[in-house]
Length: 600
Image (cartoon, rainbow, N blue to C red; front, side):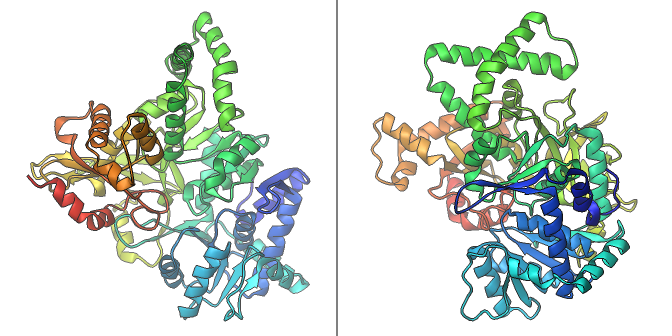
């Protein structure tokens, strides 16, 4: 489909698909999946657009969307685009302080909010802000604060724009829309400092659509589960791509419900972060280990057959021997289909994975059981994808093949991955000093990640800012060590320590349900989590798990000591909204525990 601006996209698709289903969402009250046709999608977008115009929100003015995934998020985004207005997403888990920062930085006067939690937080900001003027509430079940005399529910908001003046204004703005219009400002998670607003224009998104058309083979017959927050560039760009292709998008509103919604929807596609697949891997491994010896042999043979067929032949573009092909087809129709059906993924055609390193062990397993993941790399600043695995010829240990018409080179001084192309942001909002540091003199964006290139294949080495140097002068990549622990069912979270220290240590959050079950089986009496993490047999058991997982690391990279934590790392504190570790926060919060690990 040819179009020059996202202002047009939904309406063009409505002309093409009419009554076909564009969106699906689960009703919170009845639990039933409700459908929205392309025609209805277009109508809702236009009603929202007219209301935005009636509210006298100016061209290229910034509005905020502070909500979990909901159809209204998409109505608002595309209505903003129709008005040439800039839509700024905020994570549903953001604190009032984080919302206030973005409101002040982007001068947001109008904020769309999701459910009660977002409303409560936003109203706190509203009362204290000289900038924020009004809230528009998606969920009609939200109870307004008694002091609130300015907020309005979304359905009431839509009715305000139902007039010819507003309609004329929207049509004029759509006619004047240009690809250079700023579309979104996506605020980074801020792992190493103050959050920065990434400015993405319509031409960035249009280019992302074009190059993904070249690389991927999705069609309007596909159905994608919208699982990650639409605030995340990965999900935002992917959902836009699904809409661009005419796919149906099923919106998962509650991340905790994903296992249930997958089993109900059976999508053919879904983008996710590695953590999702790590949990799948550990769940399957646990199932295999609890099976009878006969079934273990079946699973083991099936996985090995799948590995040989998919990785030694199919991935290399080589025809497999007939006996292997027939055996693979048999397992694919039985063992693999049964496994995927339990997960709700049996119809899967493409599952993009990015946002953090994915271990080769888990990648190989997923490929072996015929789950079609596509591993890639990208940033908010690059409108998501810089590289992703091709259909054939994926190289393990890599982050995929560089996308068409994206230029990538490696800085010879520090191995930093540098990127240039039409998908690269124009800069950080209100951050001229950061912009000067973010680009090379010839216009390449500095990703902050170290890597290497072989042909058109890109390899990730480490996050440069995360790189540790021990007091012995050895450089340590903590992410690589943490990734070695991924997939261990008894380790839920881990943070590696070692900067300017004598050796490497770690803070470990065990997977408590499994660890408690292990303790019970071994006859270890446990009264509390504190008892559990201080039990010598449990400590020895976790130590054995760590040793097993780090056997391929160099001696100076290995974890020498560790401490077990009773409480997990939490969003908004030790974790960013994209589940990355806030290492500075962890170092400060657990300073006493860390220091004890280095006592002689």
